[in-house]
Length: 193
Image (cartoon, rainbow, N blue to C red; front, side, top):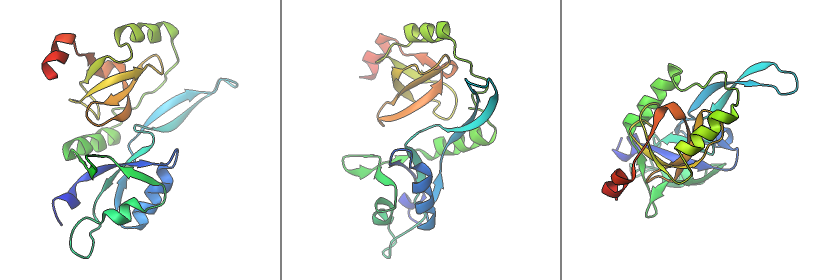
């Protein structure tokens, strides 16, 4: 197996089509993983709680290129033509591998349920506090969880304990727990640029 064939790639799927694309890619011989977390959600009408599985990267799945073409190179055509696949994330028109150590850590964290966000009951005051600490457009470093060590640009605060943003350099929208981020000050932003 070639070096590229052992790598994981982030594949964009059609809107809410992650499971459909994953099924098609598995049938085509690829290894597919959809990162998920458990969350307890309260029904507003009945007041009952139920546990749901939410995706960490809505609209995206991770695919390991285990399928090779007849010349021993990764079979990109079969990947791109699979049902539900929109594109493979990359730079300059070529797919870019997602770091293996991050995929491995995400898988371990999912098995150990480290990024489950249980019993979230929306708190307007906490949300306003987060919006002041992390305004849209601010740069933050993710310290823990599946994206630990990466930075992202904040786009919005969807709840009282979560922050949504785009991973710097990837343009990948992710939602992380506010406890796992720290704001990068303007001096550090200037050094990084």
